[in-house]
Length: 330
Ligand SMILES: [Zn+2]
Image (cartoon, rainbow, N blue to C red):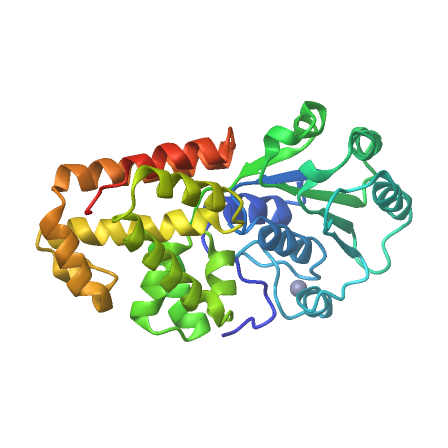
């Protein structure tokens, strides 16, 4: 690789192009808001923009950082004195925002800009959001504010309207699978499975690679799915209640989606496309006993529920409705 220190962004080419053009033309906005699902790459893109903004010699690639200058090297190591990454563990309090404002009034240490990345800004209290508004209204020429949010509905409209909004969509599975193979040395079959499970979120896939419990959990999700096929309505309701409280619920649904997709592929005799080759006997059994119309209907319900959960109306209710639709093999 020619530019080992340039932060890598997987996918979101349109956003990279847009930001790079602004960086090279010296026409960046004073505030950006990156929205999109969790771990889709919002903070990575914001960090890449920060790197490009403070790069000594921006280039026409990626988001624009050269990846070689001193500033880029510092940025890659998260040690740039003009970069400030604010990741609230829980709520973002007004004191933290006041620190940002105070710091923003000082001149940059060595770069042309001071860059603040405020992650998950929807977690800001009303006081904190209001405190930032003034800075957004009267931006200093040497300050850039980069906000991220996976729940932009929780942001004040006045915050959103003062930022340039970049809404990041899930990254194509093939892009993630290729990245896992090329940059993380994952074997092709595992890369395809992880990319599929990630639901288009490269951050999830990359974390999963280095987490030994990934596969163990994954096997448990599939085992749960297989037991559900035998369970009655009451048992399914109990399971729905437990699942509603699980932080990994999106991944659980995603793993079921891939599994049922494989059932459908077995029914259509497309064995070369299936992801769970090691589950083939079970897949064949299910494929033989459940009509493909039911499989399709359940796949549809899984997709719908995943969407509902992102807008979170009532997770438990949505999951109960889903599980009642799950095919039965008792
Ligand atoms: Zn540089």
